[in-house]
Image (cartoon, rainbow, N blue to C red; front, side, top):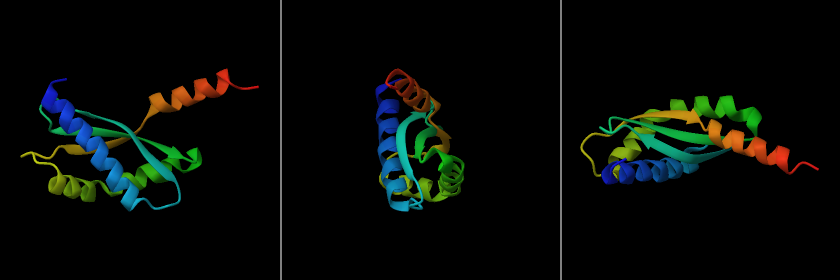
Length: 107
């Protein structure tokens, strides 16, 4: 990942977290864990975790419905010509890490 791509990816992660913190439907806790961007910066993926886990599907649907508003928010805050298409996914790596921690520290 080049320096510019890394900076834009970090900004997308931070701004995505700000946006979701403000727009959250308050029935679950949505946390942005990471983001990735394609080398040409035309596509980006924001990875989230949701608590409680039972609300994961609802929260993912909610966030995907808000993608247009998120893109507008990014347009105002990012100083780049082309705003990437944003996709949202559940962070499976984080879920797996939590499951491993739970199994390791179970008494």
